[in-house]
Amino acid sequence: MRLPRRWPRWLGRSGSARSLAGRSGDAWRSLRRIDGTQWALMAALLALAAFMMLPIVYLFNQALKPYHELFLFPPTYFAKDPTLLNFTDLLNSTNRSFIPFSRLVFNTVLVTVVTAAGMIATSAFCAYALSKHPFPGNKALFTVVLLSLMFVPETMEIPRYIVVQYLGIMNTYWAHILPVISLPVGVFLLKQFIDQVPGELIEAAKIDGAGETGTFLRIVVPVIMPALATVGILAFQNVWGNLETSKYFMQDEAMKTLTFFLSTLTQNLANSVAMQGVAAAGALIIFLPQLIIFIFFQRKVIATMAHSGIK
Amino acid sequence: MSARLRSLGRQIWKYRLSYIYVAPFFLLMFVFTFVPFLSALGLSFTYYNAIESPKWVGWLNYRNLFSQDTIFMEHVLPNTFKFALLVGPGGYVLAFLLGWVIAQLPRRSRVWYALAIYMPSLTSGVAMIVIWQVLFTGDRTGYINSWLLRMGWIEQPIQFVTDKLYLLDIMIAVSIWSSMGVGFLAILAGILNVDPQLYEAGRIDGIRSRLQEIWYITLPVMKPQMLFAAIMSIVGTLKAGDIGVQITGQVNDTDPTPGYAGQLFFNHIRDYGFVRYELGYACALSVVLLLLMVLLSRLFWGLLGPKEGDA
Image 1 (cartoon, rainbow over the protein chains, first blue to last red):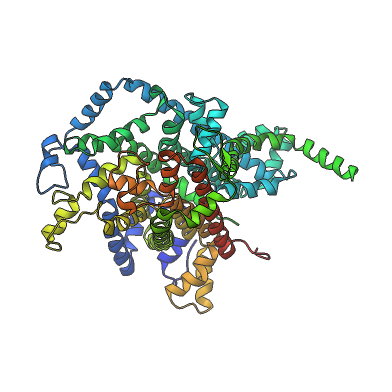
Image 2 (cartoon, chains in turn green, cyan; image 1 turned 90 degrees about the vertical axis):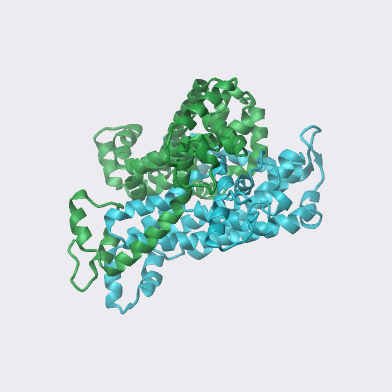
């Protein structure tokens, strides 16, 4: 779309963009168009962004510091002599505990994959029905979803513990998976996104003889892929960072997750200077997967969040 | 009457597949969120220590909360109030400002700024203990103390985490730092999605400054996203509690912060639930916290939510 001359181009461009990054083709052109205000804003924001990144850059450096650099005075920010020693030390310290490292990795992978898949599937089916099927009680159920956005399970750790105990699923993988699967944010974001899918598309598929589930899987799912990716990221972050299930529902050490193990490790290690490098390595292992997944899908996330409004 | 019931029954039968679609989500939601809430509500009227069966005490827990609990009145409530007021609205306004500035930048660089701002929100969790501990160490070997001393701004190292004066402020700063999560992304996407033609029309209608543009065009158009972000912010702020424990480096996340200086609502629940085993009282606290979240969210709903007659 061409904008009129008198209109500052950059404002128009910013408004029309649906994704954060443009196509690679217009990189050079957009660089030339930058004006004075933009330079000033960029500089100010760059300073702020750099400031916000300090603790994270520090985390990387601390994890890569060799033993003797941890004791330097005055303390140094950057690792002068980066090494992976802290990571091997971390592996060794898990070997000293009674649970093999491989078991923790297996637990984590199993729980993360199954739970995230479950979150995406339950959210998607629920959102599709809420958006496109005018069944009796539809509106009321959507209100329940909105309300459950505010019902944070964290505030109910104690009764949740009682419920899990009552169901007799303590120390089983079920207790890792079932309590956290329902993701109100997921249903909400997907519902708002599916609202944009034209009903004609779905009707056309049905006329062609596709069943309800077939229509959903073959027609709707490809269209809502960006939203599914976003919910996938949120699901992953939720499961990966979740310590509640390991802490309260698993008394058996062999059933806990790697994330939980690393977090207890870092907690205990942080108090001695000598082990700070190892603790930082543990923290980095928890942090990195989330970051990598987000970088991969960021474009889809922004496209989805545009429909996140509560209307 | 019975005819209407029968037609409703037919409707329900006709949409049976829809109910199957929504069932998994709502079933799990019911079992692991609403049942715990209801049992918390029930237990909040009892004295329950996890060993003997609960004894009915009526409104006693609630009455004690507002008349007997001096820790709650002297520390927890003022702390939570100050924390929530600065992190909630503060973080919310900051998210909008940052989102707006990022939207003004050329497309190519937006991604990296957004990523830098969003990244800290991925770091939540016990693992970050290692960062905060080392940065805020109370003697001259702490990074911040060492830096302040070198700049000549202080003469004595500051006992950041044990001094009551500083702990809450540090918690607030760190929480704002890590608060640019899903809500920030929603706001950013909302700003990027405003139709540029609206700005053009605004120019013609006599809007002169950028500020007027924000007030009369950007904000009204993205009200739905602002509401979503507001709910995320309220819920996220009120459930905070781990942060004080992380910064002070307590071994157990149920231990109170030094002198209750950083004790928030959430810590108070854990204190009574998992340390003192006064589960009935802890449940009453949970119920009050949840009601607070819902009430505040409803307040914002009134301000930003869809009105009758809105398109």
